[in-house]
Image (cartoon, rainbow, N blue to C red):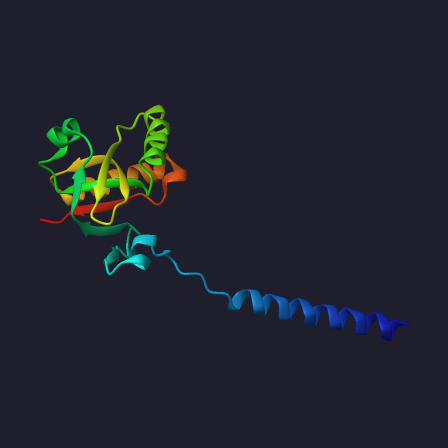
Length: 149
């Protein structure tokens, strides 16, 4: 009887060990590559220290008012990207409630990017990205768009 009990316990320990080894073998990338990089030849860089993704691309403003307010800036904080403008506009409503001032940028790839800040200096934009990530856990994927000249 004791031998059966010891044998069953030994089998359970071995099986539990195998399961743990299989689970440990699954590797997850530290930073998921954004869809835009998968679909185009666009290069996305990830800062090793902060995890902030950055992408350089051409874009246009979807409103003349936004263009007049942000056209002089190079660095844009992007909090979302959408294929459909209607989806981008609905998402913007949720950002207004959080006290953010979103702007839609139409990327060269046809995506409607939601910017919540534009800056002359890259460090200022990166600082705001870190603040957004800290204040709004649901926006941990906020990233940096660099206007291509």
